[in-house]
Each structure stands twice: as structure tokens, then as C-alpha cells.
Length: 102
Length: 175
Image (cartoon, rainbow over all chains, first blue to last red; front, side, top):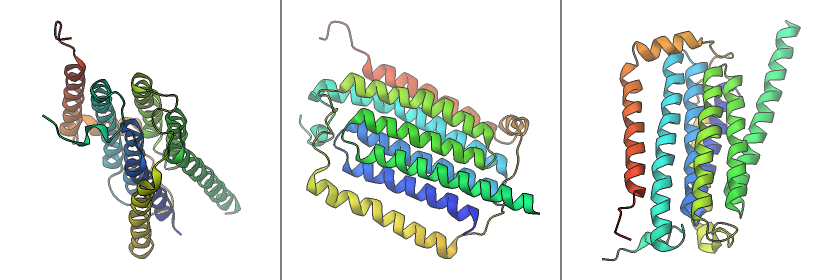
């Protein structure tokens, strides 16, 4: 197995673990943890592909930094949304806001 | 020649150790019944990914991984756990349940199996050693050809901050 495939396999495993958490968790915070795992897999995949192939390596590293910035922004917004949901529904379970009510 | 192969074996051992750290932390983050333990697992996994960045000679990205993810994002999620938690386990004490597992195990297996097969059949054969890019070159890239994403991410962060403040802002007199 060549190095690039090894790194990409680890990235795919991170994606799968994050997706599992996104589906299996009951609370919004648990789902957020899954999303962070998936974003980490994406960053690892981007950097590995840029560092081990003839692609522009600067583009890959800056892309990974962009993913990190987006993850930080997303975590901030999700924190605010989780706060509102827990204030309105009592806890941060994901099936609380499932039904639409007027 | 012998020395080069020694270094390559050391690299493989380090890769295996980091992969084990990532899998252990990720598994803990996914199946732990307590949200705080899941968060600690996520932090362990993030450190493992930072180690992989170091192996890929992307030292600046590894540093930023520790600064941004371990330093900032995980603290944010800890705040979310702290501010919302109704019970000691944060609402995850019952586990995913039978229907949850029925949905979640295919959600893990399908993308993983598909993409691992795709990788092993169509995977590109990359170079053996990663490229070495200095931080100076990264900064020149940010101020040169990649200025637009650099400015856009600052706008996105500003919008996220303003949105978070607006969402949690309580109007005086409403409550």
C-alpha cells in the first residue's frame, strides 16, 4: 500500500465514524461532535492529497486552514442554536424540534 | 541506503501509532454514553490528526489544528455541553437504541466500504515523501494568488459571530 492510500483510508474512517455519530446520537451536541470528526477527515484528505502528489502544496495546506475556519464558524453558530433549542424545549435532544407547531 | 530504510520504518511505526490514536479517540467520541467522555475522545482524535499533519510535513497546519480545534472548537463544544446539560450524561445515557443502531451501522459501513474499495482499485499512486513548504511560502500564497478565500473566510467568521450574538440575544422586557 502506498502512503497516499494509507492516509486516505484513515480520512475515510474518520468520515464514517463522524457519519455514525451524526445518525446515532440523540442530542444536538453529540451530532456536532460527529460533524467535527467528518471535517477533520476532510482536512486530512486534502492535506495528504496535496502533499503526496504533484499538486500545488500551498493550495492544499491553505484549503485545510479554510476548512478549520469554517469548522470554527459552524461550531459557533451551532452553539447558539443549541442554546436556543435547549431553552425552548427543555433539553438538547434532537427529536424535540422535529415537529412543526405554530 | 540502510539509514533511509530505517527512517522509512520509523515513519510507518509513527503512522500506525497516530492511526491507532485516531481510531481510539474516534471510537470513544462515537460510542461513549457520556457527552463529556465523547468530547475527550474527540480531542484525542484531533491530536492524532495533528500528528498525521506533522508526518505529512505540514507543520503549520498541525500547529493550527491544535490551536483552533483543540484550543477553540473543543472549548466551544464543552461550553455547549455545560450550558445545555439536563442530566449527568447530557441526554445520551440510553444509547442510540435499536432503531438508531439499525440506521447508524449502515451509515458507517456504506461510505467506508464503498470508498475503501474505490481507493484500493482507483487510488492514485502518490509520491513516497511529502513536499516541504515553508511558512513564508504559505503567507505569500495567502497574500498572492489566494487572497479571495482569505478575505471570504474573515467575512464568514464575522457573519458567524454576529449571527451567534443575535440568536442568543435576549430582548429586554420580553421575558
